[in-house]
Length: 208
Image 1 (cartoon, helix red, strand yellow):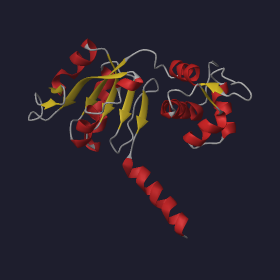
Image 2 (tube, rainbow, N blue to C red):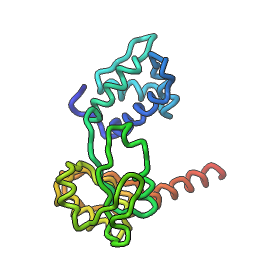
Image 3 (cartoon, one colour):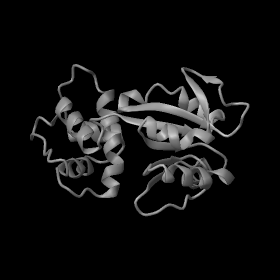
C-alpha cells in the first residue's frame, strides 16, 4: 500500500468496502466494472483508487473479494476496535445509540453523554446516559477514540473543546456549525442543512 493516498480516494474506500459486503457471499471475485456499477463511479476510477492499495487485480478475473475487503480494512485502520462516545442524546443521538451497524465496522459505543439532568441516568437501549460532568474521566477510563457530536449548534464548539482536552483527535460532527479545532484534530461534518439544498439545486436543474 502506498504511504500517501489522496483524500478523495480515501473517501471512496469505505464505499467500496460496503459494496463488497453487498455481494453474494459465494462470489469469489469481482471485476472493476461490477464494483464501479455498485459504487456509482466509473471502472477506471475504481482501478486507480485500488492501485493505491497495491491491488492491481487480475486481467480477465478481477479482484478477490475477501482479499480486497481485507486490504481495504487494513488501509482504513479497521483491523482493530475503536471506542466511540456520543454526546447529545436527543432524537438523533438516540437513533445513533441504537444503530447496530457500528460493530460491523469495528466500532463500539462506549458511552453516551448529555448535559440535561433529566436525561442523565436514563436508559437508551443497553446504555445509560452519563453526565457531561464525568466526560473527561469516562473518556479516559474507556479509551474512547472518537467523539460523535449531536448537540445543538450553540453547544457544539464547547463540546468539541471538551473532547479535544481529553485527548480525542477524531470527531464526527452532526451539528450545523463548522468546529474550530487545531490541525492535529480530524473533524468530519454531516450537515443536512447543506446537503438538502444541494439536492434541491440538482432537482431544480433536472426539471429545467
